[in-house]
Image (tube, rainbow, N blue to C red; front, top):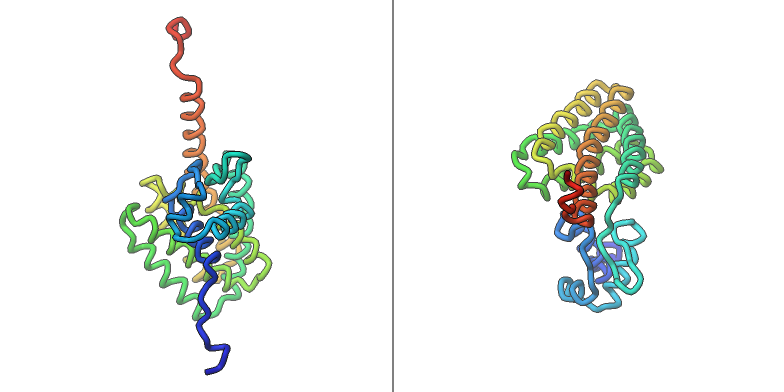
Length: 238
């Protein structure tokens, strides 16, 4: 057998890296959760050195924050950081959409339509993991068909950072039907091969997701501040 056809197992570190990333993106590990070595070793059935290497890689992606003398935690994005991410994502996603509208092959257009059909078939936010997977494949096809390697690389990296925010925005029950409508507008523009309309629809989709996610993050921050302040004295309530 040719060596190029041999199945080469993924290194254990890569498996742990991918597994930990998926757990964070899916919400199994929530923002602010502690990720002690012992727990991760037991979860993934591997050594501390492998776990620490995977954590370092996810720290570089912004999914994990390591605090001195406390260890790694799932990163908590501030409202300001989230705002910046959504602004850059909107620009890159619009660029990818514009490229796809005019450069994608017929096969890629068919692929994208099939994924959109899957999206329309999702009826409940209880299928969040499935929804996130559909969105991941949608963007994979969109960026590939854009024929813009640099925009693809930048957007792929940003979408990893954006994964928690995407899960946050999708935690709103009203978000799913709106997402379907927004993606539908992108698809309509793509069918017309209208680059400008596709870019505008992509920007509108990202901004709508940002509105939901930023509202949820602000509510989170308000709860944290309220809990830190504690109950007010009776005199302060007068």
